[in-house]
Length: 316
Image (tube, rainbow, N blue to C red):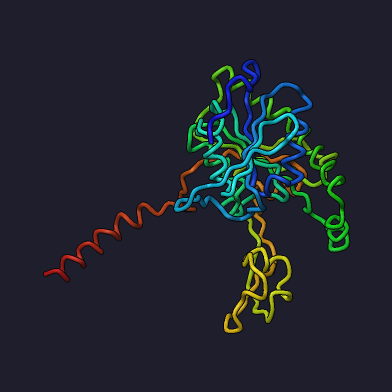
């Protein structure tokens, strides 16, 4: 596939690349594009997965080519990709698909929050991280769409039609406009710092949010276990998502297991998840390096020479 002609770009406007992990048809992505288009301030590019790719982490496609197809999306130059969120971000900033590198990459708006340890699993955060690894400023945005709802409220939310969801996500996108615009001003002025990407989480009750809150990544996470099931139907949607197959293709000899929620762990300090639950829009700078939770350098500085000495004794 050839590059798009550069005459299609708006030279005087900052260029934003939008991607996600919920797929190109997701209401969060569509609402974000629509709201940004309505401002007439940005040149918009979209490069997103063809299907839902939640919780794939930072996986990439290596041993097979990606299928890429241009699709119609009002106000944006958009492509759907057969790969992962990280694939989409990498392709989108590579100058192979689009004629230039975007000024900013936005991954989202994700359906559900991405805080604490969940960031490790998040395809939304991974797309922003991939752009960051390629030297492009990036933001991941997630909306705690089902946060704080009881079972009855959750069932009602799940029954909402696409139009109602789009309206909710349009509100989320409008809430993010000030910080998106502010970031682009800093990028234009070459005053935006390097060495991180931003992870933004929006609270469920957007109309009554408490404002922005600079936070740190915490250790909150869902407690998930496994249960054995007897059929694909018993596993429900979650199982079909994991297996990506139908019951007829599963051998009778196979054991079937399904993930199930067993609780939720939340930090007590001023972490991203806690602040999100309190109603803040959390702004969390993240990097690509993974450091241990405590200082173990002193321990291993003493421990490793002992292991090496034992190895020498065995060789003798």
